Image (cartoon, rainbow, N blue to C red; front, side):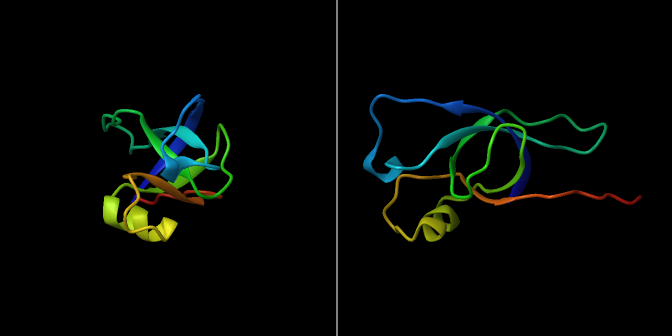
Length: 90
């Protein structure tokens, strides 16, 4: 699981059957100060997240397929929650 910020959407004219009626969102991983952020990636939305939302993403294929309740789905990353706030203490 990672925490990221939704930065955009993906629009397709054709999509895989496992993606029907689901949104694809671009997610930027968040990191601690001084760390290098990871690359943006695409995640299947399971929460009705929008641009600017902080989200919790399952980036492990088997877990993502379990969330979708489809053991054969062609999916790696699924947004599983919208994060209200993050508090870090040193």
